[in-house]
Image (cartoon, rainbow, N blue to C red; front, side, top):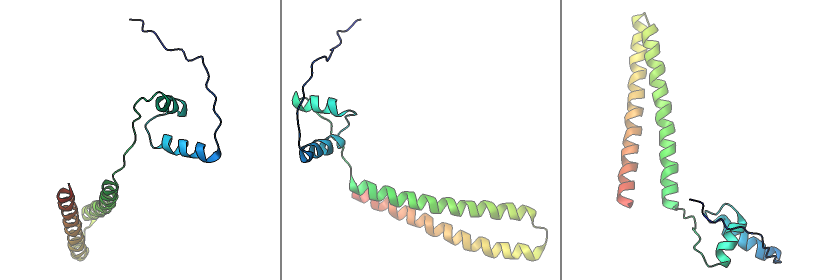
Length: 127
């Protein structure tokens, strides 16, 4: 059960220029390594280094879907407020105004739902 643990008690000191340090630091930041020393050790010992990969297309789609979700949440909040008001309304003339407003919100909701469907369709075509 007791595994032999590598004790790192030896030092390797190197001197770098500002540009060299910046290059190494930039490479380090694009990896999954948490410490510069472990990254440097892996590079020097020719061990594999896992590099992060960002898909720009997925980032754009994600940003668009987040925006659509926020808009749908706002529409849902408007619906909730309208339903609360419906429970409070006692006069018929106010009911007619609510019905007109409800139709506008319903059209807006259908429009946003169609946009989401179109975005999902485009996403599936890309993949």
